[in-house]
Image 1 (cartoon, rainbow over the protein chains, first blue to last red):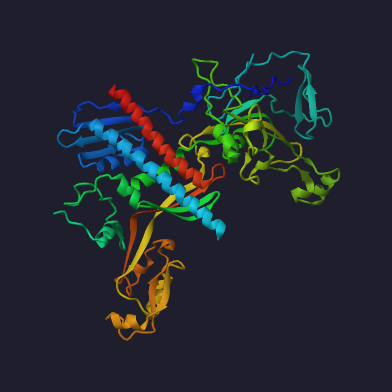
Image 2 (image 1 turned 135 degrees about the vertical axis):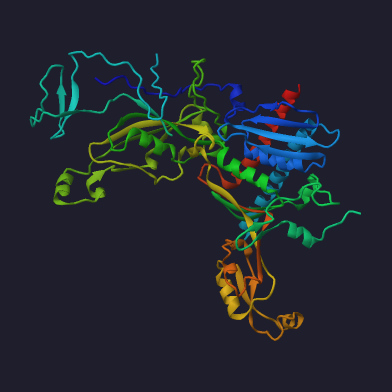
Length: 132
Length: 70
Length: 374
């Protein structure tokens, strides 16, 4: 005789979902930042877990726009591992951590501007199409 | 109780324990020639009822099998 | 005394030179300390003042727009997120009760995973992530109404009527005249809503393209299965990518340095896609103004009309008649994006989501940095 069949896998109940599900991150390896050895206050290498060229290149560009930065570059040590290294060297007495923080803030501001301008342009274009 | 059929590899295999055969149960086979359904119990001679062909094929299991759509 | 570059000089800096066999000046150079005496440090107001978005097309699942004033690294970040990191619902697990068709179980499961699904945006946004049960916590990761959707597919192929077998024997081969349910399409996948899904989903969960052929069958074969669809990202598996593709290209430029006239002009226009180059008659005043056009009044002159449509094949550089009279290039900060959605997200929402996700990435890194700094 045929074996037991598995029927309803889904729970039909009106269940409340746990709060933590809202913050669940699908990207593998939640972000961890490490400072690699040999770092000083004006020259340091950071290692990001779970990041790749997407954030790396954009962050490098924004940090390079900072006039206090002597050097900024990123690399991915091995493509099989999901790690990204970012090296920042600053002039004189500027702290690398401040520079990294500012870079992230600047990138977020840039995203805000893009969202605003895009939404306005999209709405204008749709309105124009409606009237035409 | 839930018997979860879990697949750990993309081809997905069932993981249930084998069913102990009882002589009270008959299993359906398909005849090689005439495609008729043949019920046989343990120990019965292996022959199709209609055409007498001696090659019978076992039908696909009715157990649920789980696969990853990857 | 800081030198202020002219508008023309600024234009040239942004121009990627496309030569017959090389491409030059492709690197961004708007960094501080690169141009002596000029300040190129990050200035949000300056960025805001010169950044523009221009739409070409905004259909529901196909959007084409230009982002002008952005850097390559950021535009690429948006493109990468569009392809790989926007959460999409797709079939992940297939539970097969019966499959006597000739398509193997795992092949059928693979095909079903690739079928793009669509539903109301509100319902899809309401859904959260599904996690597999872990070894340590056996109770975790149950599929619930808020993180997994169930669809069902049940079909059996039969002879169309009693006479069908005879027709087949007589030589009829058209499956539509012989069998019933011989081809199973994506539209045969039926959604089985459960719990709160009934309320949250205004539009039912269904495949975007109902005419995708999944499997062909013959009489006596049947398929009985149900599937679980969950949210995932493209990084995990390509079936979770919300775009057919998302791409961008740089705005091409064509500079005619010396006038191209007459037959040459016609040949020149043929080197480019239709609409890029148009022929115009040389006017009297042009003939009197420019030395090269002296006496050429009335002749046809090549004029650049719509460089956006150019595909930069560099064909014109292969002909000695005008290869020294034209300069090809691309504007380094003008990105023409094309976002082709598979149907689950609207194209313009996709881009907005991608920018938001870049922000979320930055916020995540910031939190990690703060945690590390103590």
